[in-house]
Length: 322
Ligand SMILES: Cc1cc2nc3c(=O)[nH]c(=O)nc-3n(C[C@H](O)[C@H](O)[C@H](O)COP(=O)(O)O)c2cc1C
Image 1 (spheres, protein in one colour):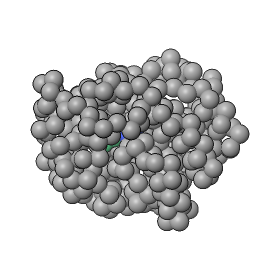
Image 2 (tube, protein in one colour):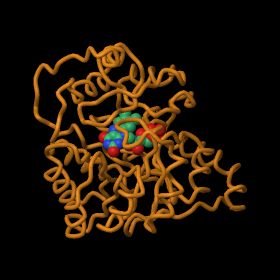
Image 3 (cartoon, helix red, strand yellow):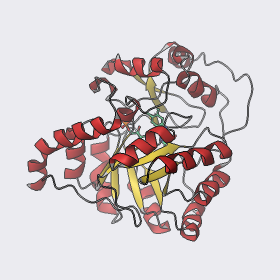
Image 4 (spheres, protein in one colour):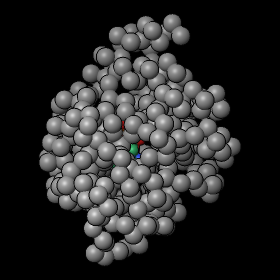
């Protein structure tokens, strides 16, 4: 029998210590989050880029589909951050994951609503701050992650110092796509892992087929770090749009909804993410983690879990020895 550590997020303990990372602009919606939750992980709806009503509907839909643990991910960088968080809490979402900046207020709101808050961090300094303000756990994200990045340092380089610095549960994220990656993270003291790129290549992820095809044919050299108007770099697949960005020829925004608290105005990230999600992959940003090339097939979420646990079994011996 495979003995996995128990990951506790507030009063919640998923059957498996695996969180599906929230993915903005409708990459992780209720279909994916509910499938992960139903399989025994924590499923996370990426609420950034959704309207408040749309997010409420997604939470309700996910809760209809599963009694498992469903969270939402809301980036601090968005203008409607407070309203989104409060609406998600009203919907009695099980947990809130937040990164791309740091809110102190969210912990008070979480305490009042009885909803655990998990901070996504890339440094010991921020992890300690999150613990002090009342985070239920921290997700430690290394530079291998897809999406916006808080560090240029690899996960397994930053993880030990952050493990030392905090007592709250720690979840490792960035570049983990198989059982070997999970085993390494647990060995370094993580209580669980967060994975996103692996779950894009699932049957239940609702992005366009052409988005998944770009993932499937990616080679290691096809992943780039790009500038983003959010003010942090992002990790994405190379395509025509990224070539324009990297050569300093970003297309100026055609209109602006003012979705970010601070936007450099370089290009519209919301539009670029929506283009790729809906299938115009050459005209948009396709966020992906550094190890996307290691994933070879699109599978149902329950098969992804079976494979991860099977692979993990062969590495558990070395974990126990530690
Ligand atoms: C397509 C995509 C969109 C993402 N969007 C968000 C987001 O909205 N908020 C966030 O905190 N992280 C976001 N991330 C980061 C993931 O939640 C996760 O922590 C990270 O990708 C883990 O690395 P991996 O993809 O190599 O597993 C995104 C990642 C991807 C691939």
